[in-house]
Image 1 (cartoon, rainbow, N blue to C red):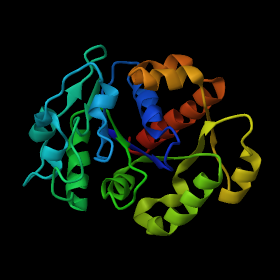
Image 2 (cartoon, rainbow, N blue to C red):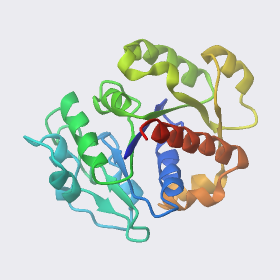
Image 3 (tube, rainbow, N blue to C red):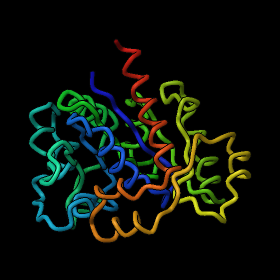
Image 4 (cartoon, rainbow, N blue to C red):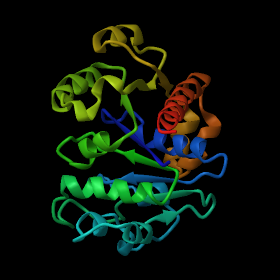
Length: 249
């Protein structure tokens, strides 16, 4: 049965990179995954695939603003990695902006995720930090596993404090989210942050090599450069996904 993993958190915490690394880890046994990003403020298709010319017709915007969403429509808007055909991508294309489409509706996001889950083994939702983008709360609601990534600083702490009240409804399963400190560096006060937010599940340390992958358009190569603590955190997520799978068997 397909599993939905949602990744959300504070700006600059490395959410999108984590989604790429997670996708590579989940598809090592040739299972298939789709990463969905619906943040139109930063179209992700040209970030994931800077060397490919992707036409506007491939945009997720055509799906989210359609009259109805089904697997046929979703499949037609998935861009598959040429070098690694087990990962598909859905996002906005270069040049699109918040005025390119009507505002997306909550229920359409749920339909998109439901339809995508019928096509592959894993759906990874790469969320905007902005909760007014309905993709984020809808993806959290639809998820089997939720990963929360925060920068280990006052911005990360206060982002969480500001957004926690928006996720108090039980359908968001807030207490079950895995929490990680993203872009963690040696000088960060990790223990103090852990105390302030009520605990953490691990670190996603900053790495120059991973940063270079992002800069050079090689986000799907970054898994080769992960710090052992990063891999330990990734393992926790994989175990959580596997545990969620066992609950349905």
